[in-house]
Image (cartoon, rainbow, N blue to C red):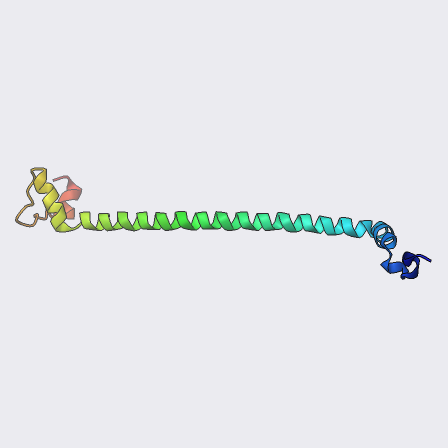
Length: 112
């Protein structure tokens, strides 16, 4: 007798390769399909993470831009800064407060 016939059937090479694979073709196809889905899902998740990181970076840059503009606007709207800009244009800030004109309703209604 040869050594192959002395071994149990499940340890023989022919049994493992042929019969086992043929009986489980659908299972191996299913495992392959699951593997493809796993790979596709991983790529999709990675692309989402990259997109989120890009959007966060853009948001951070826009926030800094907004804060810089807001700071510049606050500086330019200060009373002394406005006076300096008016002086450069040749205008002078009035030394006295403006006078208020009061119109009585009676004279306004009658056309006087």
